[in-house]
Length: 353
Image (tube, rainbow, N blue to C red; front, side):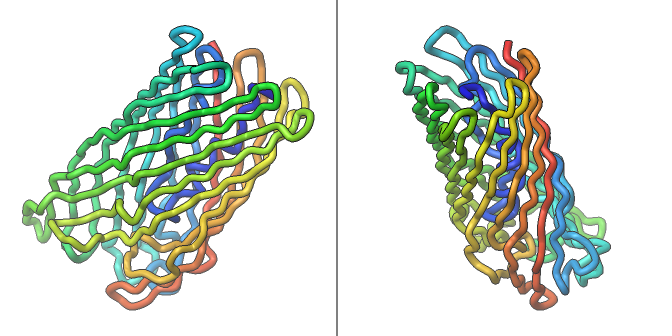
C-alpha cells in the first residue's frame, strides 16, 4: 500500500475545479515526487461539457469540450534530495455562444494558461520532507466579449514566475502522507489589439491572473489494503480577475473557492487497485453579470482503477460533476443556467526507473 497511486487524482484538478471558482483546470501536485527513486508520469483528461441556459445558449453548451495534459518527472540526486519537473495545463477558458440559439452569436473566448514547475525536494528524515521552487506560467487568448472592449481581440502571450513552497509528512507503515503546498499568485500583462470592420487598433494591456492558493493533500491506511485519501484546495479568486483596456472593473466575476475531495481506495491484488471519491465546491453567488462565469459551485463523483505491471502503472478514471445553478444578467437580460454538468475520462501512465 505504500506505493498506491490513486487513479482518481488524475481527474480531480481537471474537472471539479473547472469553471466553478475560476478558470483553473490543473494545479501542481507534489505526489509524483514521493514515489521513491526516479519516476515519470503522463496524464490526460478529456472533458465533455454540458452548460446551457434558457436565453444565451439554449441549443448547445457555451463551454466547449476540452483536453488537458500533464507530464511530470522526478529525479533522485541522492538519498536526501530530488528534483521534480511538472508541465501542465493550469488555466483555460474555451467558450462560444455561436450557433447555440442565443442573441450573441459573436461572443467567444479562447484563453489558455500553461505552467511549468521546477521544485527541489529535501528529506529531513524518513518522515518529514520540505520542497520549494518556482512555477513559470504563460498565457494568451483570442476573444470577442462584445463590449468594453468591442471587436475581435488578440491577446498576445505573456509569462510570469511565482513561488511554490511545501512540506510533507509520511508514515509508510500505515500508508500515511500529508502534503501542504503553497502556490503564489501569477500575474500577466498582455499586449492587446481589437479589430472592428477591418480596422485594427491597439488597446491597453489585458491583465490576467491565477490566484494564490493553499492545498492539503492527504492519505492514510484504515485497514489492510484500504486507505482514505483526499484534498482541500483553497484559491483566492477574488484577487485574480481579467481586466481589459485599462478598466478598473473586471470582466470576470469569480469568488474565492474551496474545493474538497474525499475518497477511499483498495488494493484488490498486487496488480489491481480501485478507488471512489467525491468532490465538492460550495456555491458562492447564484447571480452575476458575466457570461464568462455561468456556474456556481460543483459536486461530483469519480471511479478509478489502477493496474501495475513491473515498473509501469496505468490508471483510468471517470468523473461526473454537476454544477450549481446561476442566473446571469447581461446585454439581452437574464439567462438561467440550470441542470449543467461535465463528464471527464482520465488516463495516467507512470514509470519508475
